[in-house]
Image 1 (cartoon, rainbow, N blue to C red):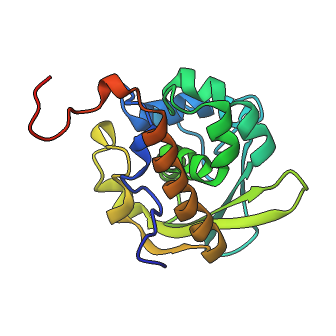
Image 2 (cartoon, rainbow, N blue to C red):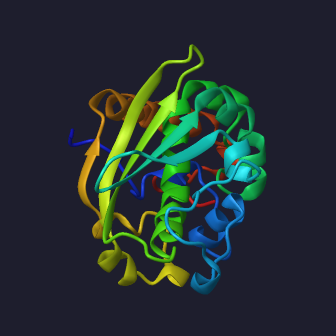
Length: 220
């Protein structure tokens, strides 16, 4: 990966992300409509995202691939995702600086932000299922408006690593250190990096001049 990569679960996203009270995991489980308590979880392999959930309505689908060992494929429909960004702003995933123009300018940046937010909940949901596997590979991809599917990123996670995480106090981007074999698709990586620069420039240009610090040597 390039030296500029802002990959899985990084801290670069909060430039347009709003802080969420209650934590990332609680939000994700609310979006997927799944219970937090392990004893209430279904037996593996139960669906991670149901067809009537908020996550599904926002364009996210998950499925277990017919492979061994375990593999979860997560797909994000770009068209549906962008149509529901206003709802994500209301939910606290993005802040109000994510204007319609910025949504069109930086879709890959925003999609990467969303996957950073919701992936921990998917991992937690899987490994709290009864008889969950010892490890699993998670692979994200997205579908463009023309119907083509493109890879985003993938990583491995073990149940042992999952059990060492303090899920009630997991910060945004906090799961990265517990994953292995993290790979980000080169094309997606380039797009996210470029849009990160574009977003930073756009936000700096739109900042209210009254909010800027005074020139050096002057006081407010």
